[in-house]
Image (cartoon, rainbow over all chains, first blue to last red; front, top):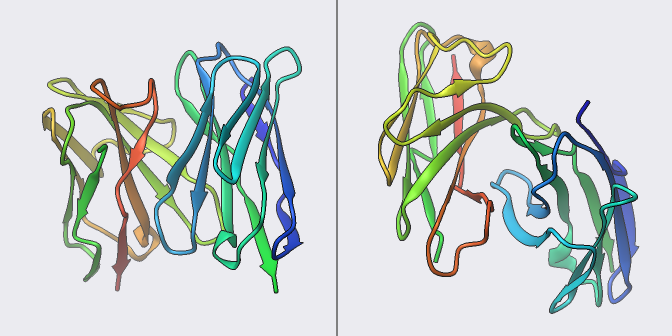
Length: 108
Length: 119
């Protein structure tokens, strides 16, 4: 079957580092995506991993291990504006599957 | 690059009426467009996938006669909610993927969403 698991909620402090984990099972694998979604808005693209390893893009990094069906999104130097939901999604043989999202609260 | 627009951004309608939502890729050709529905505090639920010039593929449980999708060109897809009822009230989001300079492989670019309220 196809399934994505990620924590429902996380809380972190401004300036800190937070890691949001995602495990997945999918039929076929064409890549793993992370999106950010603020309340009441549409998702915005953050990162795409298709090969194992770490992709760094400014304050955000994303890691993938295909053998383990595992990814994480790393957010550094947290800012208040990073409070949002973070969606993990996989692209497989048949379609795009989204996780339920992790709601991140950044506290001052 | 990779900008997707959606219109209207919000709509309120009476039960039994039909509502059309437009999704446009502004600076790239969208070979595939997707329509999602999202209820409060829930994840995106894929409703259908459409390729330009062909019939949409609907997800299980989505009524194709109620949610009409037309992907007439490489930059425009429309979703029509026919005979809308209060339970159809939701946040409808389209996304598009395509090929072109600067576009990520298989990456979906999302429109800003349309909030539908059916009275």
